[in-house]
Image 1 (cartoon, one colour):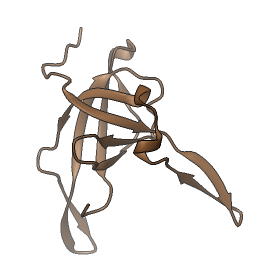
Image 2 (image 1 turned 90 degrees about the vertical axis):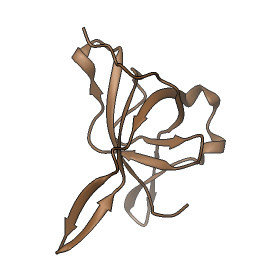
Image 3 (image 1 turned 180 degrees about the vertical axis):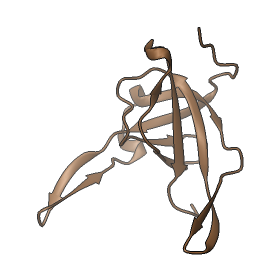
Image 4 (image 1 turned 45 degrees about the vertical axis):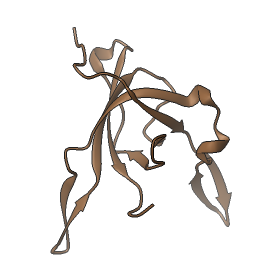
Amino acid sequence: MYRPAEQFNVPMKILNPAWETAKGVARKVYPKPEDVSDENIVFCSFKTFGGTLTDNNGTVGIENTATITTWYRPDIKADSRLVLLSNGEAYDLIGDPENIEQRNQFLILKVKRIGGKN
């Protein structure tokens, strides 16, 4: 049975998008973190590993990525956004959350940071 070695001591807020159609184009609209209730706070372990190297048309850069391990929450989906409460950095999920052993107990999320500067 899987047991995470890290403590879940990093608070993050879950932001789930609403879909809005403007001029026939659907787009995701995320609420502001201060407008979301405290029920959407989740405690997790957060590891960055220094980011991921990317190559875009010969230009090498670093994409800020992280791995998050947390308790299972059915409201965390592939289009969710997580915000660190300590500094306000926002992260989008890369792919679907991984439900470890399909036991609905722990999730592992791969995320990438949105934007560059705060």
